[in-house]
Figure 1 (cartoon, helix red, strand yellow):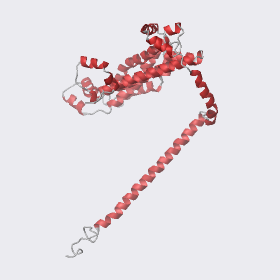
Figure 2 (cartoon, one colour):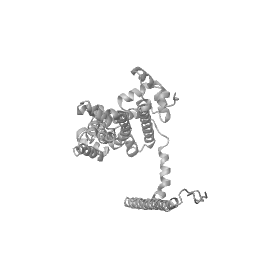
Figure 3 (tube, one colour):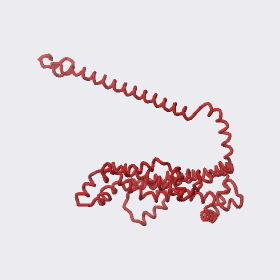
Length: 351
């Protein structure tokens, strides 16, 4: 039979009733609808960028930002940077300060005499002693704030305390977070004075708000399966929280705590600048008191070393908490790996 009689069109389309060609308008309409949606998205993105640019320009004008003034004073800024050179490490330890050993040589002389480092730590003097004070403020503030952050974080979750009662704890954490640590240290002046103790309390309080909110957000994302399984065994509410909820986010909680510890060390430096002790106070005195910019630059280099060291240790600890790093090993084996430089630096090849 001919092609027309068999129902097959000369072009190869099946069905002589014209159903296949009838789909073409539907396809064209779909394409036009997609193109219109893309044009609308581009238009909205363009309008959004214009609004963002306008609001930013208005904000810059409101605070008195003037690019011409900055361009005019930029050469003076560059020339002022030379006042910070060379860094003067004369106050690196008590030994270098008493013997007037300056520049990078002060660091070398202190390192080859470890007793001078211990002396500075004992007397809490020199860049070494002040740096340890700053680290101690960040570390102890994190440790003291952790149990309160855990308590408020758990009670702030709607899975534990029903709405709207959980917002009592969420609101408390939000209130704490709304007040910067620089303000908390001023609030604690009548209690502890303006010093390392006040800075410690400020960091601990700030930790409760920031870390507690992270804990709450983590608990909102966990699976319901383990919680229901624990509940089906007749477990109490505290057991459901500990074994059904916290067991799912244990490593995440530790990782977030280490991250907040990094931030708290930086906050401790900032608190020192307003007089709360530590290396930040040394920087403030050198820049605004004695105008000894070389010594101030040496302290800034110490701050960079502190922050990078804390961040490196924290990042390696967080890397060990990843699921791929969980290996069954004894306590002595884990302790022995602390001396494995390849493991800490992440340079060991994977087997």
